[in-house]
Image 1 (cartoon, rainbow, N blue to C red):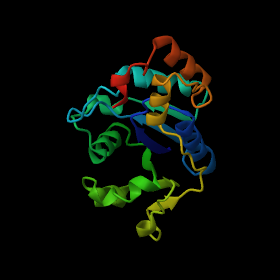
Image 2: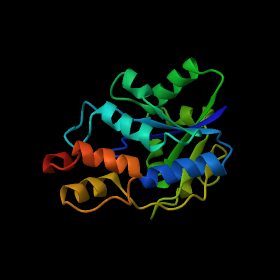
Image 3: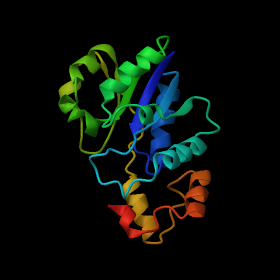
Image 4: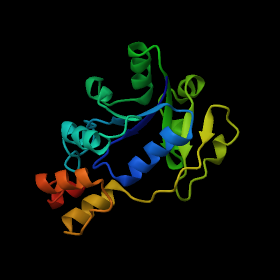
Length: 196
């Protein structure tokens, strides 16, 4: 099975993430998309990040009715900080029957050459690139392992949503209904210190 890995903090998961993940599962040759929740980076301030398990729970309820999407906590069990190459090697050992590809925005592609062992990632894995404003990914346009996908351009960010919640704004249309209800019920992101 060909699986697309969509890495992120998902803090919180929002409709932009889900539109991209579902588009990749529906309109490319990827058979499934795994949303891989990144754990706390021990080198970074974590006050803005919900607990790993809470972010995983939000992703699980967001995609519970979509058989083509799956929430993955694979990086929770790996050494920190997590490098994509380490995760890919681990997944290949654990699921040798699957082929894994990466899903990323064209903004991440512009700094991809700075990733650890990026050449090895490109050698063995296809990158599925969705458009981001002001980032064309021009340097990789001709690369055989890089596929540009004409997915919708999403300009919603988790940072904006966290700020809006703290400012007591209504964010119900930016989150799936069940995620919105859970975030509201748990009073997530209401404190200013969670915005950094």
